[in-house]
Amino acid sequence: MIDPAEKLDVDAAVINPAGCFAAPIEVLNDSRLTPDEKRRILESWALDERLLSHAEAENMKGTGGLRLQEVRLALLDLDVS
Image 1 (spheres, rainbow, N blue to C red):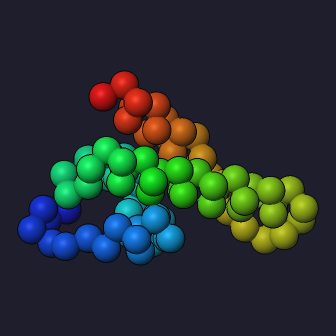
Image 2: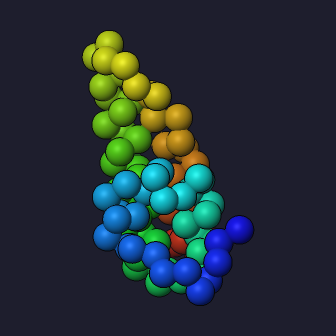
Protein backbone atom coordinates (compact mmCIF):
# COMPACT_ATOMS: atom_id res chain seq x y z
CA MET A 1 0.00 0.00 0.00
CA ILE A 2 1.27 3.44 -0.91
CA ASP A 3 1.40 5.97 1.91
CA PRO A 4 -0.03 9.26 0.54
CA ALA A 5 2.01 11.18 3.10
CA GLU A 6 5.26 9.75 1.72
CA LYS A 7 6.99 12.05 -0.79
CA LEU A 8 7.52 10.62 -4.26
CA ASP A 9 10.39 11.75 -6.47
CA VAL A 10 8.51 12.04 -9.76
CA ASP A 11 11.67 12.53 -11.81
CA ALA A 12 13.15 9.33 -10.38
CA ALA A 13 9.88 7.52 -11.14
CA VAL A 14 10.03 8.73 -14.76
CA ILE A 15 13.64 7.55 -15.09
CA ASN A 16 12.97 4.14 -13.51
CA PRO A 17 9.24 3.40 -13.23
CA ALA A 18 9.73 -0.31 -12.48
CA GLY A 19 12.04 0.62 -9.63
CA CYS A 20 9.39 2.81 -8.01
CA PHE A 21 6.23 0.83 -8.75
CA ALA A 22 5.57 -2.92 -8.72
CA ALA A 23 3.00 -2.69 -11.51
CA PRO A 24 1.56 -0.05 -13.87
CA ILE A 25 -1.77 -0.12 -12.03
CA GLU A 26 0.04 1.27 -8.98
CA VAL A 27 0.87 4.38 -10.99
CA LEU A 28 -2.83 4.88 -11.78
CA ASN A 29 -3.84 4.35 -8.16
CA ASP A 30 -1.21 6.68 -6.67
CA SER A 31 -3.09 9.71 -5.33
CA ARG A 32 0.15 11.70 -5.01
CA LEU A 33 0.44 12.00 -8.79
CA THR A 34 -1.33 14.34 -11.18
CA PRO A 35 -2.71 12.87 -14.41
CA ASP A 36 0.20 14.45 -16.32
CA GLU A 37 2.76 12.88 -13.98
CA LYS A 38 1.06 9.50 -14.32
CA ARG A 39 1.22 9.82 -18.11
CA ARG A 40 4.94 10.73 -18.05
CA ILE A 41 5.74 7.75 -15.84
CA LEU A 42 3.64 5.30 -17.88
CA GLU A 43 4.99 6.55 -21.21
CA SER A 44 8.53 6.15 -19.90
CA TRP A 45 7.68 2.64 -18.71
CA ALA A 46 6.24 1.78 -22.13
CA LEU A 47 9.43 2.97 -23.81
CA ASP A 48 11.55 0.89 -21.42
CA GLU A 49 9.45 -2.19 -22.17
CA ARG A 50 9.66 -1.65 -25.95
CA LEU A 51 13.44 -1.28 -25.73
CA LEU A 52 13.72 -4.46 -23.66
CA SER A 53 11.58 -6.32 -26.17
CA HIS A 54 13.67 -5.03 -29.07
CA ALA A 55 16.92 -5.99 -27.32
CA GLU A 56 15.64 -9.50 -26.69
CA ALA A 57 14.63 -9.79 -30.34
CA GLU A 58 18.29 -9.13 -31.16
CA ASN A 59 19.32 -12.02 -28.87
CA MET A 60 20.34 -9.81 -25.96
CA LYS A 61 19.33 -10.92 -22.49
CA GLY A 62 16.31 -9.18 -21.07
CA THR A 63 12.79 -9.64 -19.84
CA GLY A 64 11.33 -9.11 -23.28
CA GLY A 65 8.94 -6.31 -22.37
CA LEU A 66 6.67 -8.51 -20.27
CA ARG A 67 4.73 -5.56 -18.87
CA LEU A 68 4.17 -3.67 -22.12
CA GLN A 69 0.53 -4.75 -22.39
CA GLU A 70 -0.11 -3.76 -18.77
CA VAL A 71 1.43 -0.33 -19.38
CA ARG A 72 -0.64 0.19 -22.53
CA LEU A 73 -3.83 -0.73 -20.67
CA ALA A 74 -2.93 1.66 -17.85
CA LEU A 75 -2.43 4.46 -20.40
CA LEU A 76 -5.82 3.66 -21.92
CA ASP A 77 -7.41 3.78 -18.46
CA LEU A 78 -5.79 7.15 -17.89
CA ASP A 79 -7.23 8.43 -21.17
CA VAL A 80 -10.76 7.40 -20.20
CA SER A 81 -10.69 8.82 -16.70
